[in-house]
Image (tube, rainbow, N blue to C red):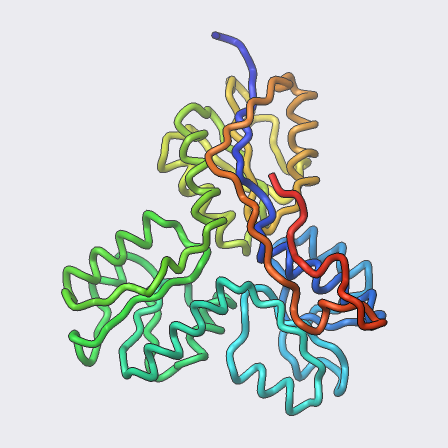
Length: 329
């Protein structure tokens, strides 16, 4: 099929249940309490979503001490440490916790293993909000391992009482390589009770692996601070894409990327609304890539209940959006 231009559209892609829940939480808080509603950090790592919510009256701050006393504050999907919760309470803030339930699960694991005096090797990226929140649950028991290379040099106090946990948005392959290296050094290393890398991160990586082997170019829609979006670029290249780039918006796709390209793979990170993908597809169609084939590797129908403060409307009736979860690709 020489000269036939086409798009392979990865599915699942875009919004996951945890992101959907967090974004709806901010929207509903604005509906319920009126603007402004404060949000600690970006609610999810996507510049378009943050900009839209700012226009609706959300104010994003770095720390809770920037929030006026007594105001409403939403904790982002990435989670917060107990110290942040305490700081918010000290200021009399009315907190709404939009932490993804899958991140909360990792927090609970950290608390439990610390209680049993395990040393926790937390695989993740130093400085990422999720890692800061998880490590903050048991700071005296947690050591962050940023990469497989760091696994070769990490020092533990008791090799017989070590467990690994991970950030939820990592590359599955790289995480397993880190665990393999850790286990070579610490044979008694325990696994978490269940997989820490979230279902959505894994599903999007599986889908782009299937697309990448047939793609001359892969375009990942997602923001630079979105760990799972950045990982999708890396996975695409590792699994055969000749080139792969991340963009926030369609107008960032460069014409030279398309030179000589027949097959373009398209996907998006778990915090990306599908409208941004549709804009990329429209521009690609205008450039001759109108044949779009969906490559589906999983179905997703998971939904999470909204934070308890938002499950009822102002009159005390159950809200019809009590579940986070729009129709997702």
